[in-house]
Amino acid sequence: MIVSHDRYFMDRLVDHLFVFEGDGVVSDFPGNYTQYRLWQKEEEKKQQTSTNNTQSSSSAATIINTSNNITVTTKRKLTFNEKREFEQLEKQLPALEKEKAELAEALTQTSNYEAISKISDRLTAIATELETKEMRWLELSEFL
Image (tube, rainbow, N blue to C red):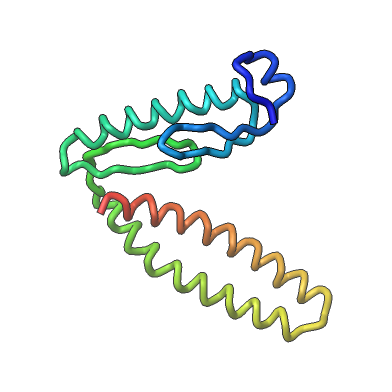
């Protein structure tokens, strides 16, 4: 355990921090001191952004992209084509899930290599298609 105020020294030796934040709160941070400071600045920016977004009008829809940690506020509604696409997706998703379950069952019942290969390829294609359609359904459902 090292206690120091020398940033260079800490960056060279430390790969894990216990940050004493006050009021008995101790945070566990994997990384060196410089990485912690950069992370801390990003967190402050997120808090400022979220504060600004909560002050926007209550009729706005808020979308949070967790992979990039971005919050976007938008006021748009679904177009006619998007509503139609949403309805079609609600019909297609259960059908794809059913086909996936049927193929998984067929996969367990066959021992022919060629049949297993074809079923496996189709299962992979269905999984990819399902993921794409579920993400699109989620995007459209955010506006409803």
